[in-house]
Length: 158
Image (cartoon, rainbow, N blue to C red; front, side, top):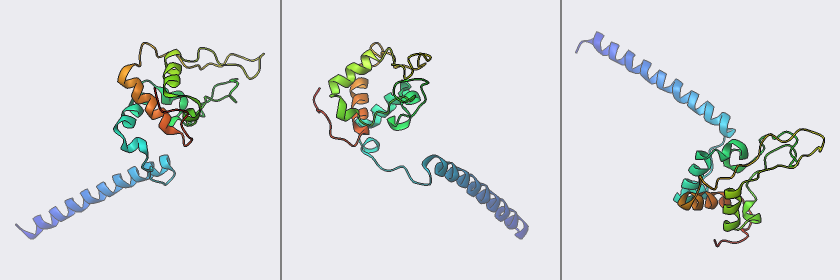
């Protein structure tokens, strides 16, 4: 192989390495933007297969659209009695048993009380998932939701 060919190969490989570093830098900056410069912590949900499946159910049925990533809440719901925001789910383990939580998911929340009685109806409410989520999906979702809070579970039995 000639010296010119070797130089050409080194130049091409250097350019490829440079391009890869640029891409990695963009990915890293996006990760920092999303996580505030911190790596996502290892949690029970990231290690337990049932909780991983439950998180997938949470996303599959759009629960995260209103309750926020990891159930943190804070999505705006104009004139809702809950301070104009959708409730977070980080305290459900302190409020509901697994059976109560599953029933809440099945029946939904058809109406949301108004903060201002003369104001508009809050546009968002939780639909009933009775005909959509059942069986293993429901068990996985309930387990995931109960894992979100740091509080003591109300009860661990179905």
